[in-house]
Image (cartoon, rainbow, N blue to C red; front, top):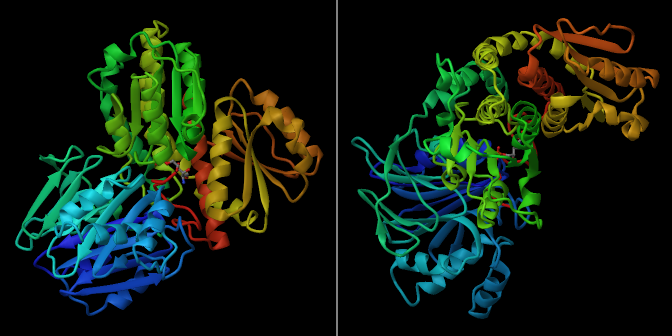
Length: 608
Ligand code: M6R
């Protein structure tokens, strides 16, 4: 979603703003813009890529500026709707949605303000301008204006003849970067990747914080209206983590990084002989003890990870587990269970619906909360009592890949921990699960070797309009994930189904133009699945089967088979999702879509 960069420094900050926007491109956007102080305002905006804005900004020099990538919510992608929005010498960039903007807009129109865009953001610019009539101090005007906003926002504000930048956040991410070295300066951005070029010292703003950035100082006032000190963290993100290196696309890089990402995530179990609940935080032994049911809340790919976890938790720990789409749970009248463990799964830790759903659960008295997340210090991590941080490293491609497999590793550890706490885990089982987890990076590496064969399959998908993904048991969520991957980056309509459900409807769709992708591990459901595949073959459907080395399924006309090197028991979903990621990636390449930034999508969905 939208990305913000702000900078005030002795150096020329124009290249810093542009580089920051380029680093935030992955979040998804349709237009970009910036405002510079010289000491009057210069505003530049463009529809399309940051590169176009960079060309416009060529030759500009400034020491104070704010910049933005916009993902349209209110108003079509266009130059007039691109940020910054201005009100008489004052410029604002904004990430989030202002829910009461229509009412504020009426009020401001009545006060004589003319609107030039369809955005909710322009309301903020005029509201601050109006507030400045009764208090000349920009910081105070931002505080008073934001107090009137309902909704989510991270904003950065700049005004002519004023050498400060004021930023504020509520419900959308924003952090400060503290300049180091000779050039110094102070910065703000939606995420750390935008600021690594100038600093590693970051301060994560809290909900309701308003901060003032000067070249040589910052001050922060918390939601309570008093000055606060927020701890500075040294970012461990490496610049290489966010560079493409030898790869053509981030999605490709992230698929191939999965062995390392899993190894890093599983470093936590090191050479341990036993699994400890402390993996989930110091309060975990007490909080997880006596858990009798689990509720998982998540969106998109993270939701699919939760669906796999349900099979594991129920089978291993013998406790009921429900998995809900966060945007549904937050608004439905569910029955609260204060004893239940609530698990929020999120790559970004900023997904608005997941964050709101966990707050909703807490408001209903459900305090046993656990975040499984890839971003330390993110809002979801801070909202939960317990945490497990996956170590996938920054995921830039919109299509989630390494975040998913590392989430699965974390969820398997949770299932085993709960099993142990329920007295259902024999010591030899524990040892064998630990060994399987440790071998996982190597097993995934072997699956990646199937790429060339998958590439050849991908050619055959390019002219297809629809595809069906089938799986059974804990591979059913992998079918859903395969379908999501294909649709989001290749724009081919795809659906995931439990194979047993085929004859209850989707079989009607099957003909020679409908490729059917099936996950066929060598497990207890293989024979059932084979019957389902016969139903497809009998209707002329073209089957693409991902089997295990020892799955007894035969290649025949209309049935193509690729075999994964080894059967991986309960952890098999971690392996079987990898060829589906590769398939989507290569179909997208054949179709020539924008793999890392598919149309209409954003990486972090920070608005509802
Ligand atoms: O950051 P999160 O894991 O909370 O994001 C949830 C979804 O927005 C995300 O998984 C989305 O579905 C991906 N584009 C899927 O590839």
